[in-house]
Image (cartoon, rainbow, N blue to C red; front, side, top):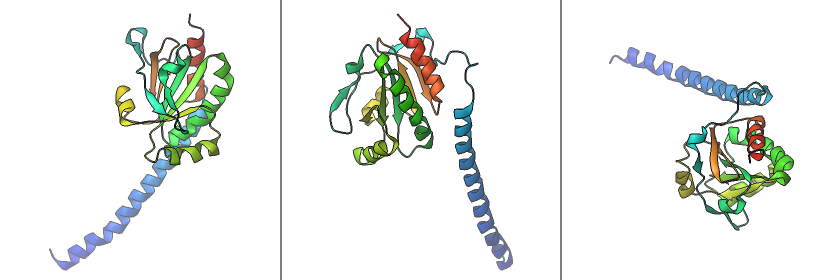
Length: 195
């Protein structure tokens, strides 16, 4: 290849790199803005939020996982309660966006038979999660997840992934990605009112 052509091609590399960087920054800004927009939208006109139909109802797999203090916790310990089970990580922006809603829901419904359980998938385990919990003021149960629990729940391919479990221990809904607290609150109210 002649020298002149080779030099021309190499001049384009920094420009292409800069364009890719601009696109990436723009995309991250858009997703952050969209998460904030989702929080502000009115969801009252949406039909019931359950992602599964009654014929798809399956028992939630039990687990035995440590909390951030090392105490072993089983899902079956919470039988008779409506459970929001959230797979998340500290480094995940949509997971972080959901946490304030979970804190509010737990304050409002914990005495009415609702449990919120976060299963952290952070590689650093407790050392990543404990300071994060303190910073955000997380008031609900946080457990340290492992490969087995992610497989038991169908293989968690994206986070947040959140399951809504009824008082009988059946999975009634599964959400992948950010949802505002109104979606979970509607599910909670429907399940609390079930006989």
